Length: 456
Ligand code: GLN
Image (cartoon, rainbow, N blue to C red):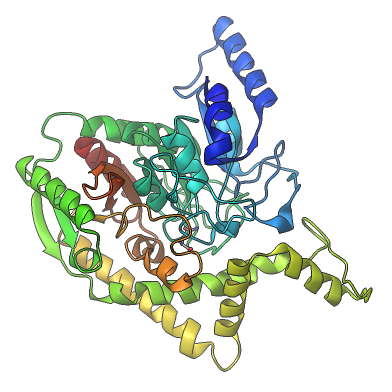
């Protein structure tokens, strides 16, 4: 049924870069055979899933939305993909994304944009717009995304889906093509909080192949979500509204739905307070130095030799440096080049302290803002994004406008804490979905599922 749905709508939406029809049907048949023979399978066995193209898959091309990796089939699976297979989920294919996960609209994909299923003239968010659109359009019940500065939560928000960025280190990054290694986290996209919890339980937990993977034993996210469905789950929960992540610059309908949710929380017995995080005003600036710095280093591996395409210089000068330059010139799109240049500049001798060093100090201040806030409340809430889905083409030639859209989601990545976006209705002025963001202290992902399920 999902493959039929993909054939019916995806030529319009372009959520998928690759559909693995034969493999999906073979896996489904295998699940049926196992069930018929009485094998006990997990709760998500036989459930189809879409996979963001940033994740390595040994049987499907993996491009990270870039021309430079066109046609590349990795020799191995990302740990999260291996865990999906072990739990007998059915990979349907790979989803579209901004090139190397740089963007908030999926318009920076080298393979053309994805459209928002709610309004095809609007963006589905980014960078994981393909995964969110696939879930919102019923092409897949579940998807995997990656979130470095909001790429799971913001697409979820603008497509009316649920998306979770786990605690940094909670889900393996092994086989996730690196954007900014200190910020990247893989996580679930779904239509309900409970669905994300089920998927989180499959992909999460320690992985010796990822040196930043936490050794912790995690509670069941599924049980946490189910606890949220019980009566009175919100009673006495201390909820902080982040003053800096609302108000001026936020779309009226977004603020309206957010305020209604706050009223509902009060009604349900939650204790609401306003908290201030004074350093968040510098979060976007710090992020757009730290991210390009790490990305410029990570993307140095695309050197025409080890991965992907090779382009020989037109003038026939075949030194390794010239071949590398010609390949990177042809293989990377404008946003990727912009960030490599920003990052190498910020890291260069003489500028390092002024830019990268200062940004790291701001990062510490933001972590302290969170620590102070979480000494008073259990969770923090804000709108997931300042606006609903904007129109295709509206911000694509204005990088600053695109970057500023990330204000709500970036602080959680800088602090390594978990965040969830869930739908809270449609904005009256444009009929587009609005998302609520919930943030919890590091390692308290389960709290997001309890509170998220209770609100939903
Ligand atoms: N929009 C952010 C950026 O462009 C988020 C990216 C991400 O989370 N991968 O960097």
